[in-house]
Image (cartoon, rainbow, N blue to C red; front, side, top):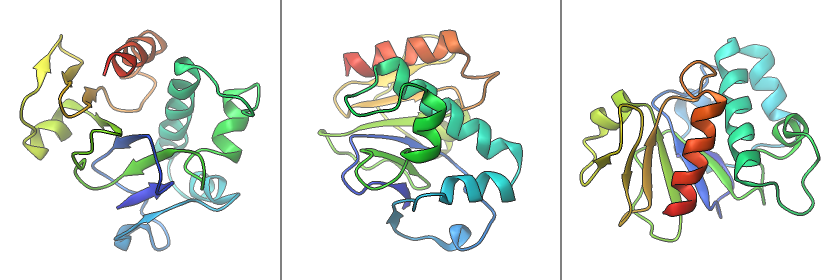
Length: 159
């Protein structure tokens, strides 16, 4: 359950969800409608703006795809987590799906999920190549800095 494209290729898994509208009770994967991300940001804490921004910056670090806007900010506002974006933000444990990449945001969340088979590379990142799973710092500018976003992109490319 979460926000994003049902045909996602990459998803972040987070422990919390927006405390707004129907999101606390959401029990499916729902693509955002145009303007919905802006609505979430405008009606919740700054936390969600940061989370969505770091997610978009990470995708641009992987390399923008054909048809994407030049600026990651425009991608975030107009495409991220929408239908056909191939992205998702999951509020549930990552399903094991070898055709998709799952990134668990936060060491604490990974511990709470009881994930197995993790190879901790350093204090910030762990990987389970067999399950195409990466644990990264939380999607926040302080925890997932530009340097760490670049490292995460390298790890994702390696799984």
